[in-house]
Length: 158
Length: 300
Image 1: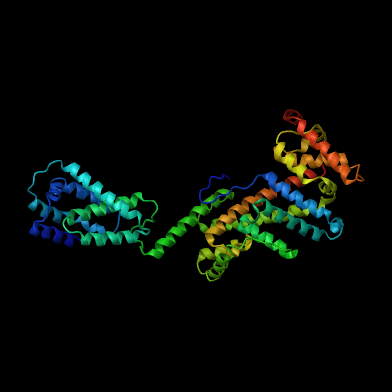
Image 2 (image 1 turned 90 degrees about the vertical axis):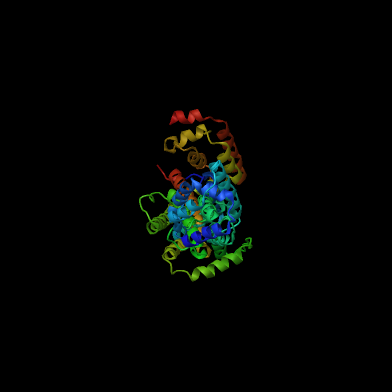
């Protein structure tokens, strides 16, 4: 996992950044009064999951990555918040989206299609950019998983 | 092409515009140079393979060369080097290889006196430059050389480089070769990571109440300080709590050591106000700061 990949720059911040963000989001969740009701565990799970993704997106660099941007936008939609992103490149992504929709003829594009569905914000990226974003996304996801795993391990009763 | 070269040489003979250099060089070392050219061209473009028919050219040359050969090798090298430099500067201004080839062709046709020799050295130097110049995409033998396919090939190579990087990141990708298998592996890995996140969040929601009070009251600043300043320091309180269950990695232990200590020390005092909490956690933080690594390790 060296950061010396020439084509792809995969410097992910340290684990404590992820941990910090996640704990922050958890504490925000705690402050909601309806959070600790014994019923509705499904809702709780969903909220925690969403908090995990959002905190991961923030920890990984906020709006500097396409997938993190898409994640944050998705989350903001649900809560009806107003989110502002720098829209300089919006036009380019719109064009890419148009050109991508016409392209599932090649075999490579068919497989990239599946990846696009998985990685948030993948629909607007060209294949090479998609691969970069996937690499970074995978690293961040694995960091987040480690943080959560440690939390669970620490808290589980012995 | 060989005919054209032959014609040119004959034309040169007839016109008697030949400079002494040309025949000096080709006099005795001509064959060697032609062989060298051939070795370059042997792996290269089809068009230039016509230069293999150097026997005919040899015949022409032997008929006409009657000069003394003085320091042929030096001259030859100088010429080659001069032409190389000329070619290099031209080559760097172009972006696609086929353009370069076309330019060389047209230049060959328009050069006047040194045509035979310059043709061969042109092809030689251009092939040398093609080998040295890494910016350009190399058109391989037998492949199309139009712009679109070259650009397509460049793009594909870029993609494959990036896929290789991905291969390093995703474990277990080395065994499968080919784009399809690798993409499948990557997709599976991403899906499994996302499922893990979901699973762990479910677990966390179950463990929720224990975490609640502590996270609520601790300020984030203190957490940050804990993470950044204390890679090695663990308090005695923490060791008392759950030392054996801590993973050996420092960061993780810090994470959960903080939470655990707070948990054990504050379970009995749920009624404290937030200000009281902060004072308590402040003292805890100070404790954390002052202790050393060795005590932690000795307990382990």
